[in-house]
Length: 601
Image (cartoon, rainbow, N blue to C red; front, side, top):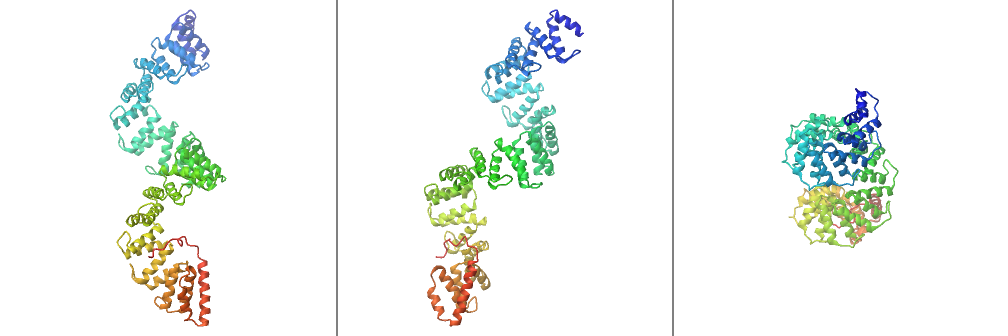
């Protein structure tokens, strides 16, 4: 048979020449030989055989047995296309769309695809659908896009079925219909289209257009994963990592994440880094965290870039390198990451990894603040308060502190309450101050609790309420606030908002006094003098009163009066007691609240 075809081809039979090319291309009864296939197809093509012309175009387009040459491919595709070959018309449209062998021109691409589509060519119909969807070579028209996708989908093209499913899912060019979407996704998925399998899995997972069925969802994800679909592998990694819909399994999560990550899936790379950084089911390994985050960061993943910067800053998993931390934070900051912008501002402020530069510090701080970073807003307000890098401006202080407070930052809520209570940058308003103090105090802010207690104590902006005042003072005192401890002691002494209790008075007054609170020291001295909470003891009264007088140069008159009541031996004893108390105070950690104004009027 082959010999008969060969003889006919040699005799100039055009169909035999074409057939002989096919025999050599497929190795049917002869040794597979691309050169011979090309030779015979060329002879037929030059005599106008349309299928031979198309096959030559395919050979040159793919570099299949010949050196890839898009110009020669276009030459033969055009010959066949002009004779009405739909396959060649489709390929010529492809050539114009991608600029392969011809100058890129989407309008000409559409022209050729129309010719092929008119002959029911499914790939051309698909390409026309995409052209209308994206507005390439034609005016964007979702309705026409959906129409062409459907024509192709009905003929069984999986890509068109998948895209038609997406049109129904999103309501693009058709009425939104999850059931229709699921129908077309399933047709594509059944043909092995991994993208459709992933989306169909997600529809089953959420019960959109189909009954919710987690096992069915996992089945489709796994089918796509088996085809090395990185998105499916990433989703499976998420499912096993979170344990929300299926049993949590970190080993499987890592396996699927790693499969996706090795294909360059940035979020899989990022999540692997998170697992190793947080020791989530595996021993902490910051070197592995760095490795995976670095791969994602190199691809532009902003979260990974920020985290890489933080690893370099802390020296976790890599040698500490402030300049590298700044480099990565800057990359993330330039992509709009507010945390990176904030950290970069701190780097310029402190001169870590870069030359100290207040102007650039404020530039990045403003960028982060304007993009909503709560700590940047708060610190920009503080910068305006101190005139650090910007001109001091109380109104700007209040504006930025307000924005941070609105986001729920307790420190900013406290600071805003302070501004309103003092009329700094805003009109003084104790009612508004109380509102902001309350928000911060409810979050456990020690200073806000103290100042809120003061407002209730004095009836500023709120109805005077000693019980409420005591509750907030006590919350603050229990967290170690010096002035609050004093006010708690006074409440117990006077029975304001709480039942009188000398034992509690002594406990809280002594705590505040030994931390250096002058008024607490005076209260103890007075009670020793009067014999109220303590047994009367002039030696103790003298020691505590003189201690207080040393603290603020007040009370010396009382000290002198007490000295007259002491014998020489008692005075020596009192001075020794004073020295002991001073040593006790000096041994205490310095209080962060000593510089705050007392609430006493």
